[in-house]
Image (cartoon, rainbow, N blue to C red; front, side):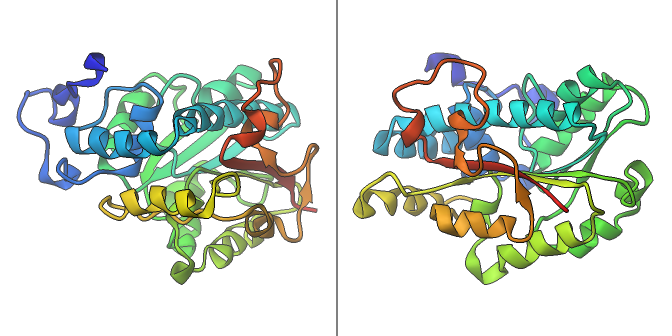
Amino acid sequence: MTDHQEVPLDWMSGGQGAPPSAELRPEVPHPARMYDYYLGGKDNFPADRAAAEQVLSLSPLVRISAQANRAFLQRAVRTLAELGVRQFLDIGTGIPSAGNTHEIAQAVDPAAKVAYLDNDPIVLVHGRALLAGSRPGTVSVLQADLREPKAILADPAVRELLDLEQPVALQLFAILHFIDDADDPYAIVRTLVDALPSGSYLALSHATGDFAPPEDAAKGPAVYRSATAQLSMRTRAQVLRFFDGLDLLDPGLVTAPLWRPDQAPQDTDHEVAIWAGVARKP
């Protein structure tokens, strides 16, 4: 893993090569940077890599699950764009990598609009660079916290880019498992979905411990307790609740690799610890 030992600090520090801002808290593992490491990225710090390696030591399927989640995002966005969706609200986007939401949606329709929202400073810095190569007026990268859905819906920048009177694809990929029960993730999702018109969609993925022995399923969240966000894995039944009142598209709620796959099934597809689904608001 020697190719992951250095973080390109020039973009993190405005190109001056100075130490990263304290706002980045490089000494504390961050889920977005750990996810970047799982995907083979280089935008992570030693603390992120150490925590990620702890998780990987518990199950090599974690890296496979991260890759499967990313591939699910791409298939879901392509499907939604082909269904005619032209507006995407992507919350908890994570560190950009190849095959971002706007790239896939705009391959179907160059006029498709995407609002990326995240609360991580690294993601926001990356987003500014991402904006430089996008079609003007079609992509925004904004700072927001999923735990404040009303603030997201009222954000002038969101409303300037997206017409919330027209169908929107609400995307919550691999983020709800960082919202613990005390913050009522179901109410958060309801608030967002209720604000969208008929014909909108909810696409989400969520980590689960369904395929691990109970004693092992608790070990991953234990590692994340030292990170900037806690991990709350949920069962299939619990994840299914997020889609209450919506019409799930085929094949329903399945492990990420099994959602409309574009390649031959793998032996591990049924064990990937990510539930994934897309549903339409009637």
